[in-house]
Image (cartoon, rainbow, N blue to C red):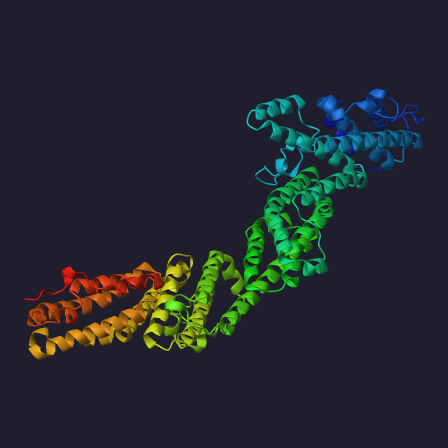
Length: 633
């Protein structure tokens, strides 16, 4: 009988006993005598059992050596599908026998066949999972672009033409790799078996096998990735160097765990148990919950039980980034109600890591404010606090995206208590600046305030301004050459570059103004008897300035050149005009060489050696060359 006819008989609507085709009561003949022939439905059931029995018994591992040592699905896939069809037909027959109160003998016979079939399918299910570990490893499975179901040909279909399905499969073989082909074939077989066992009432036996094997793979994967379960006390007692190595291992593991291990398991579980949402959810949860919680709880424990210090923040930000960057995948993979606790753990870790970062930035700010070093920096150079703080902030700027998320929940900035000019950019209620921008500007402002305090330790005001110019220039350059540039913007840079020039101008005025002031504004109007006096005064002031500034340093070339050019532009010009206008007036005097000690070129030459530190001071001790001295007449 055709399969459609068989299915319509087994599942036709039930009528009254007088008209039911499948009634077990003898139907009276039209002559009024009971019929001794079995009903048509009994004949159909007998035939169903007769057809299923040899197919199922052939693969009974308890009766034949062949069945014990041979895999049904590896031996002949067509026969495997026939086996599955026989089980479904047997299932329908048992359902009918129960509904129609058929003889116990037939029901027992059917039940025995069903138990044999289920044992066989259990064995096949286990073998496919065990023998295909390579093809069903999470990496191979996760190469599938989405968790969509395998083509409908994967599942049993009464109306399917086997030959047509195989032809389609062969045509598809050319378009996918051998590994993907093997992986999809194994998943297809597992799904056939799972759906058959679940529909037959053997879901528990099927799930037990699946959970044991797949959980061991996930747990082994987590272990191989270097992630171990650590208690809070273990983390608290661990040296930072050791914990840092653990964090590095975690950072390497989280990407693989999310994108490959958990994603692959979710895909496999969705494929194998596509017929039941509840089974699919509970099964996936049981398999991954332990490994996933170990993975996602580690950052929380580190954040809660590690001492907060500025140097640790970058590892914490790395972990925050590790979760945040993979949040779409985490949200998708653990979207089931059963896995909500896993996603919640990952979110909790994000929250705790964010709290750690905010607290650490507060520690960093406090460390700047508490710095108590009072010794002036030699040569009015760049303070170590400036170097360390700006290196720290420029590295923080590399995490601007995650910092923007973390600082989004921070309390309002103290900026609101200060005028905008302190910050160097516009910020209003109509057009507020980003939180990360305000935070970075605030931390730099705290640093600048501390530097203002340290500038007061210089007894010479000129050196104090040079110190401020050096340090602010270092800050500006750090901003220009890091991601701070994009956070603070051109307006901030323009303002602080202007401040650098103002500090440099103040240094020039206080450090060299007395030298410039020793020269007359109108060199041609000087009386002859005053010329020698002016030369001597210039020599004295210039020598004193050179000695005082000889140890000064300006490490940044652009600022160094700017200061020297600014000094030379005024001093050398005035001195050259005075020199050219008055040199001849004293050239004939006996001691003219001691009066006119410097030619204009000598002044420019001496200035060119400035701001390189102590090593340049020796050049100031040498006397001008004879060629530069005025000749006597």
